Image (cartoon, rainbow, N blue to C red; front, top):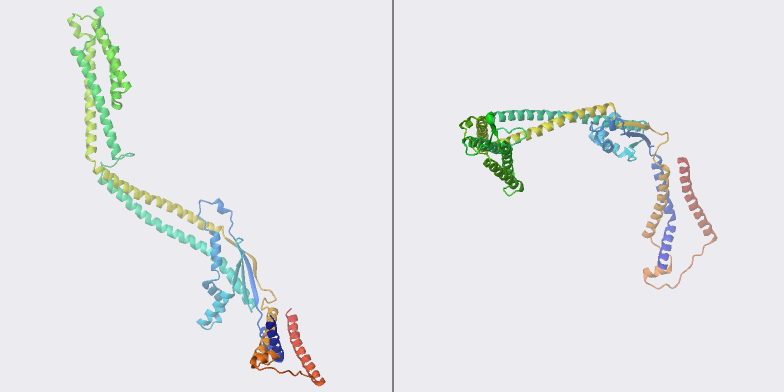
Length: 508
């Protein structure tokens, strides 16, 4: 620490030795710098504030009917691209700055200078923007800011109209394309149906559904045919005597069937049994109970038949009962013939569908493909029609209602006092720089022309022993000269400080 202090003391002595050089250097630096700053032209700042309002009462009312753009994103893009080269070139033409440009190089320099000096500030979510521009000519600065405001507002309005018209034009092109596709699809469907007439699937069912329905109808008709045949055979057996016809003689008035009730019950149970056999096995409880009941009725019928004595009247075959049986047999024969015709028809339908087991599924697959393509194109076509109307409403809404309005809070203004340069700050910096520069010059000279200020430094440099030192004895005349030089140095330094103070007072 002691060595550092000693070394610092030596440096200070060296600077003090060449103090007049330091003072002269400070004067030169200060006067030159102050003169340059004083001659700098005044810089006037033109500024304006604009507010972009993105709130509109019609926007929530027309929600779902129109396609509203993201206004916040649009405002953000506009603010970022305002100071772009095309916009700055427009500003140059609007304020007639291009007249001063002699060649392309000057014009490029002018545009770059404008892009560097124009400042756009924002407060973020409030959509409040500030445009600043500095120029020595206050009128030119104001014109530049006004031109930027005009470009900012026109850009917002023009973009909305251009986007709307571009969207409508694109949608119209797509609608025309889908119309052509729909016409082609309709012609293909028409030609396909004409080519495959007779093999087209019925409404609401495909080939396998039709085949299953035909098989079900065939089985049902066959069952009805068997029931009709059994009823007919039963009547035949009663007429031929294979089954007893239970008669009760009623004197001269004739006879009437005695077991009509039992026969009707048996016939009803047989129909019910046939229906159950189609759905269940023979071990099902309902089938077992039905068979047991039929057997009981048959036994009861036979027991009652034994109690009736046969009649010796040969005219019994011409009894009303026999006539009724003949009529019933004729009706049964007609029913069987009708059922046989139905069975043949359903059999033919089933066989025809079964023979087309390869062709019809292929036709259905091709038809499904054609319908799917047609429905997709139709759906897209209808959606495009809706989008076109929505785009038209959106365009009219943007033009008439001004979803994004611009409000100029502060028009372009230029204060009477210049905004720059900050001469007070520059004077102070130059003053401090002059003092430090003078000290630096004195230190550099002391290092170029070094002197020994104590015995230690002399011993270290020469390497020889120091026998002694002779002190400096100042005479009165030398003391007076030394004091005068000190006063002159102080006066010179104070004069420099005074000039600095006068400049600061003038700036203020």
